[in-house]
Amino acid sequence: MKKIPGLFSILLLLLLAATVSAATSTSTSDSASSASTDAAGLVTVSSVTMDPYVFYPFEEGTITVTLTNSGTSSVGLSDPDILSGNVHVMNKNSWSTTSFIGPGSNLSYSFLVKVDPPDGTYFPLFTVAAQNAGSIHHPFMIKVDATEIKAVVSETPDAFSPSAQETVNVTVINPRAGEIKNIQIIPVGKGIAVTPSTKYLSSLDAQSSVDVSFSVTAEEESDLTFQVIYDNGDTQHTTNVVLPIKFGTDKSAAVPTVNNIALTLSGSSYDVTGDITNTGISDANGLVVTVGSPAKGTGTYPEYAVGSLAADDSSSFEVTFTCTDLSSVPLVISWKDEDGDDYRITRILDLRTSPGSAGISSGNSSSSAAGSSGMIPQGGPPGMGTRTGSSSLFSGSRGTGISAFYPVIAGGIILVVGIVLWTKRKWLSAKLKKQ
Image (cartoon, rainbow, N blue to C red; front, side, top):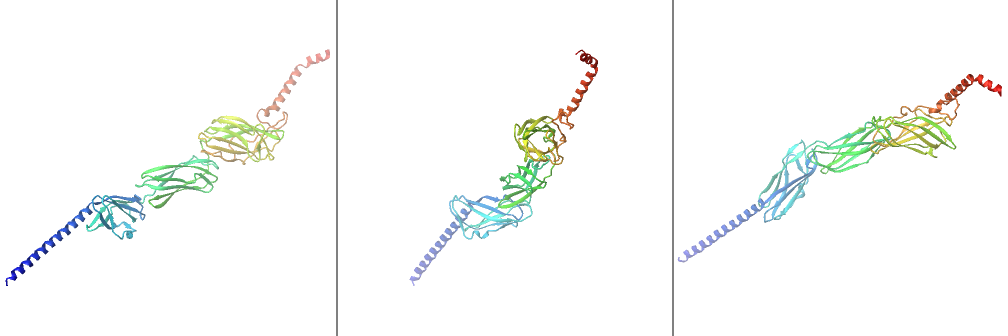
């Protein structure tokens, strides 16, 4: 009977030991859980970036969320997601395992998303589970805007002319809140040559614009379309602007007008002379007169340099050439405007009259130019009337310049001599009798 109290004492000691052990275990577990919670609390979202910065409705893009661990322990993260009724994550299965973010380190999640309309500003919620410590949540802002990029033709000449090189400016305007990238401006038009054929811009900031210059040479009237292709994020978009090309006359252009054309034969070549007047508003610089095919410049003046011809000023010219067909001799006039752009017009001369006379055929004029002003319409400018000339003093044909008065002058001289002889007839008769 004395052994029973001893047995009870042993059982009591064992019970006390178990109680102490359980208390110690619980305390250790609570400490570990608290430590995990504290470590996860030091993991925060340091940045959220979007490409594009502003989405079009139904557009795909990328949202990148970066977390930073400012603690001293690694933290396991799993099941990242974006919660929103307008933003749909397309790559949710990309993170099937737990990722650990070390102390002082960063961890980024890139979500491929598609954004629904309507336009507006939304606040999706980023969430990620932290190991043994609940979840980390972070709201951010996303914008949806259907506003298109604008493209306008901001500068054109007063008028286009056949084969005339003109300057056209296209302005691209970005009214959106985010930049656009990889901008291409491609001009397309039938019978129209444009330089450069493509203009590339790497980016255009939000709420900004840029002017792009093109040189346009039209051979026929048509529509010139400027295609503006650009990227918003990784999605390509296109907008167009159309410029109708219509031929007309530039009111400020230089207008070389030719008259008083005369032709003489000199051996096996011809010599054509005339007057050239600038009846336009602008100066014609470096003006040169020559002939075109089938005629060929030769001799003393294969091409004649007039030089600078101011508005309302005139000058003479002389060109020597050979040609087997005088019915259509191209007279080529070239010059530069104040910007250094080249111009050229061609007038077709009909020189089928005898050597010493010339004319300009009607309705056969052609013109070509390169510059930033309009040209003279086909058919020839005012003042290019048909004239004939003569190398014979007493021929019956009408001449050009002073030669047109040779018959009158000769008749006047004969009349004066006759009058003098008539008034002096008695004196002359007496002289003759004395002899």
